[in-house]
Amino acid sequence: MRDLGIEAEPEEAEMSLADFEDYLYNGDENAKTAERLAVLRKEKKLTLRKLSEMTGIPYRHISEMEHGKRTIGKRNAQKLAESLGMDYRFLLCPINGIFFTD
Image 1 (cartoon, rainbow, N blue to C red):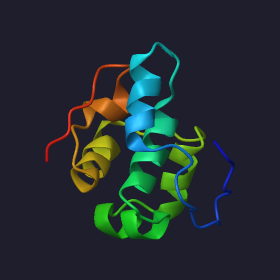
Image 2 (cartoon, rainbow, N blue to C red):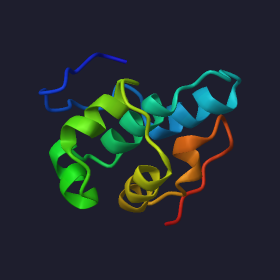
Image 3 (cartoon, one colour):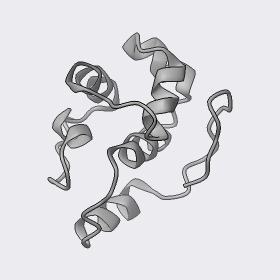
């Protein structure tokens, strides 16, 4: 994935959600939760700032999570997952399937 930097607004996702699911299910056991968060946010067409407003998590923290510089943690995963319409465990667990709530 492209490094957008902390201050940069996101561009369109480089990989669709369907492609990302295929990437996960076809064996890359080391798929990072950071990549999941970035792909899912972009798939929902949310900017860092909009997701920050929805979750109450500072946008810089979300950017750091997406770049693997900050761990997500259970509380933040729950806030993010609610905004992204999915189960929080997907953001925390190694390849585990997708738990969408909508």
